[in-house]
Image (cartoon, rainbow, N blue to C red; front, side, top):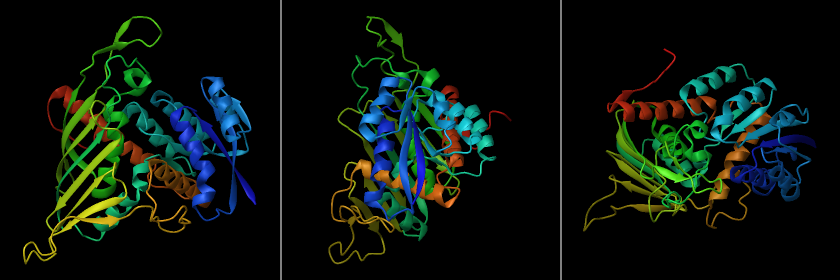
Length: 384
């Protein structure tokens, strides 16, 4: 059986998630016809990369990502670094003829994203974005229902991605709070996911109006001193938007939503039906159909819970079983499998770099709207 060599660049939290996903693919999916082999792991802190050898059995550890790209046995590369490193690593990986699985957001700004998109056009390999929420069974079912016209004419939507981890003012500065490293705050960290979900389910954005707020304007430097440093990225981003199909909606990305954990709230309303989903109750997609009889005494009208649970379509093996509660790591495994299968089959994938670019474009429009206090039309092209 042919071996497919894998390299992981960045071995923090999300790097470990990618690694765990690769290791678990054989348990959850039909044989790929190839054996996945974890060959190299890279981290700016070598001791973190060395931990990957102990935890997952990587063949070598390094603090130089070019050691991963120069290795001829590595065919697939996960890019799990902070945002400011994405551009150079993605472009270098394309030049090295690797298949690439890149974390969101694609880049720090639209200029970087345009350079990456240009390089992608010269690649014949799979270059896929890690928008794993597309691979929740409930979202997959929602996509099917939208495509078959369940909603009728889409009218309105509201979507939010809520965290509370930054509500503590003593949480020290990290790269996610440094605009030069991250590019943005909640709109990049969380908003990128829900912008992609809106595009995936409903289509492209036409225009957007946004308001960003930073409530904790200073935080500890995180270097062991008592120094307080300025925070330049958003804690919360609110927006109104209009899509090309005429749907209007609201969107919120917040890292200071007290009382939440990791919560995506989604509602879509059409003239024939509605869909509702909450990632903290991920086993069900709620659907409302106006074609149901409303008599007597309400008839059959009302939201119904579809049991999406772990009912992944083939070639999933149905492990540990379709009836068991689905979890966040399972979506990551499904997304990673999709990347690996596309790479083995030599397919251009979806979501690809173009999808990442379109999300970047919406985030850029939101940033411009917040700065200027006006609606911004899409597409946005800073290079003219």
